[in-house]
Length: 78
Image 1: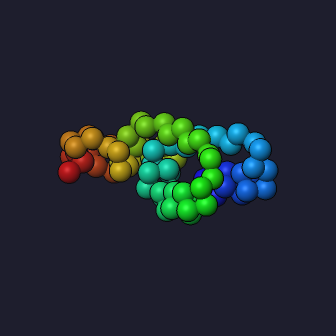
Image 2 (image 1 turned 45 degrees about the vertical axis):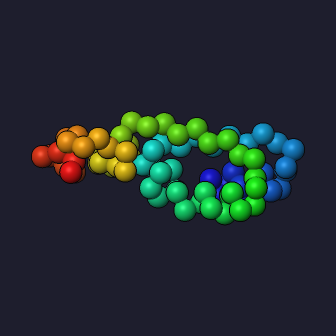
Image 3 (image 1 turned 90 degrees about the vertical axis):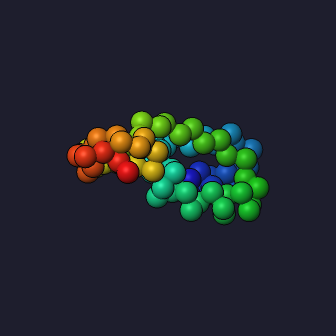
């Protein structure tokens, strides 16, 4: 989102689209929504929700279902 915000601020005429995973966007990257909204930047975000962090080989994420077994929660997500 920070790069998309910079692109949109530098070139407001562009249609800017962000594609991110659920772990990145809804956990680590969620802090960038406030500044984006505060600047009223028209940026489209596409979030792919697979319920795990892909780069850490399936670690549970904020969107993991209760009871989901992952590499970091072998007995299920609580």
